[in-house]
Length: 449
Image 1 (cartoon, rainbow, N blue to C red):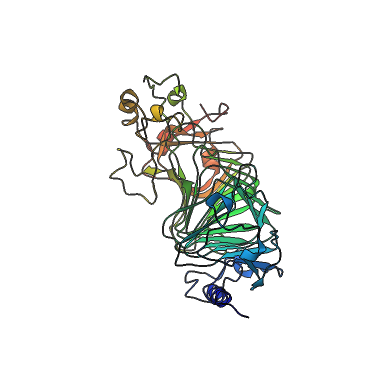
Image 2 (image 1 turned 45 degrees about the horizontal axis):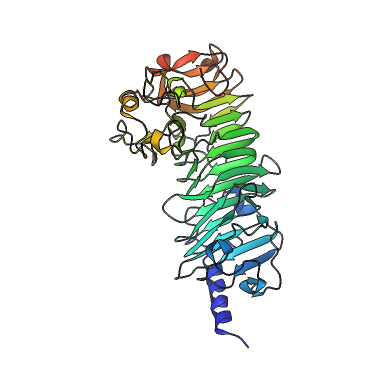
């Protein structure tokens, strides 16, 4: 006998298919994909036949953490639209959490199983959480988070496999979908393209593969994250896109370490028609001294530290469309609640203030006000500028640098900038090109100089 629930589920699954999903995106439906150029790598990707698990009880919570139904119980799932008899997640498993007018949460935290998926679709009304310290998630396919849905994970969400994939967030606000990101594709040419606004809480590591920030999209790395791009990795930002951090790191760690990898604006198939941006924190480039009551806890505030390092043959380049003036821009991040930046209009404005000293010490941070009066007296008047160091084998072409502090654009060899091609310095550099460029053969460990 066909139950009312089965009918409702069948209707929900059919509606989800019509509205597109991570495993059945319906790329030809212009109403679902109005901005496709037709040259996205993920468009031509074909996947082998897998299995589709659909949560059979949308509107009802799942997981012991939220005192819901057991996600281990096959009775709570459909597989390929039929009753499931077992629950097996692996790299050929697609997961769908259907839309529901009644909000519900599916939590895989504390469920003690390996979270390995191919495609993941999170429908309106669903909050999908999971992962765990030392466990995280492995994703081999696409992720589509619909408007009114959310997704998060403790630990690392790693992007794997030998496919071009996408991560799409339909919400207008930025979603923090993981604690860490790890890109570990099987070869450097495979990519993950991010559509919409995505952020991570902490680390951002590009080991193998390409992290592509789609047109007019943004990807934000986290606090104390030490993001890096290794020699088989790349961060590529398309027209109108932004990659940076959701907070300004005054101290603690370098924003971006490119160790033989690639930072690029545009692609040969999709060259820049609008600027693409890489945001870097501003630093104590001037070596100001902070004599405040907590100096013993954050004495590195008085040390000069760079926001980015480029070494081991790293490449930075912009690929511009014929006739366009667009370029790849590396510049300092503007802060929404920084007293210096309140009236500044910028392409991207971070929504968190600076992290000073120990971010988890409320007394030190003065309950979010970040510093005692003696510290703020110096900090609030500090000239805002970022800093970076470039090894002698760094290659640069088609890039504009802006917002650097005087003497804080550090090159390992004199004459290095002259060897680069189509490089310009913007009007917000303190002292202009002549004022920001300085020779420093080697940084100290930790990014200090």
